[in-house]
Length: 341
Image (cartoon, rainbow, N blue to C red):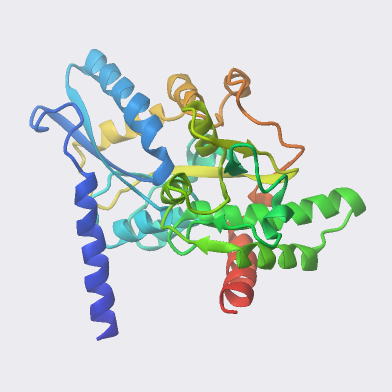
């Protein structure tokens, strides 16, 4: 009965995404060309729909004389991955964490060597920052300040959001990186204590990074740990928030992958072409325009003066990759030691 209920729940979760599937973006019925279905983690919506899809469609039309249109669905990375594993009709997935791609491989949805693509399959990156209300009334200047009494933190749910998992690693890893810089050794107890104390101040756990941002916008909480681009988008729009740059923080890395499971021989060449386009100069510059960092050319990143400078940056390799970061930190520290208390 539990398995039946779980299956029904997941089916409804997949069906619910049809609200996000408006049909081909060019307004056609798809009968005169190819329709590519892209599932992505929440913050990928703007660069894909506003810049990359239209540019690729125009390029394909000019070179091949046929139409390409896109259907999209965006949610938390874990949610998107679960939907695809349950049969959602994705051709491509752009996800927040490599671990979700590995789950798709294990589930049989992905059979290609996705790490053989440029950047080992990583299409863009972004550092994690702290977003606070304008004027910074709680005087939050680094991750430890989020643990102070009276600070209310919005944090996406690590069970549905890849961004939430990056955030946990940013907070925990910041203490490892700072202690390593100060003494040459990683202070694991201090990192664990900080993550525990920060989580004590979490008052809301929305399902994705974008939903968490919306919660802060509507008046909940004092701060949010999130992707740099979320903070830059809000301040650029004149919203009453400001970005706080931690002394040490993680750069998240986002993989793009082709879903082989139901891809037809007729459709595959177009999907392959779009996958390759994601690492083209044109697409990488589009990512930078929307405040993601390019993985192919740092000159593109230097062209965006709004990008913050991190004193002690680190990546998932600080933890030994996702194969160690998830069991050791997300599972071992957060789930087993913090969330269960």
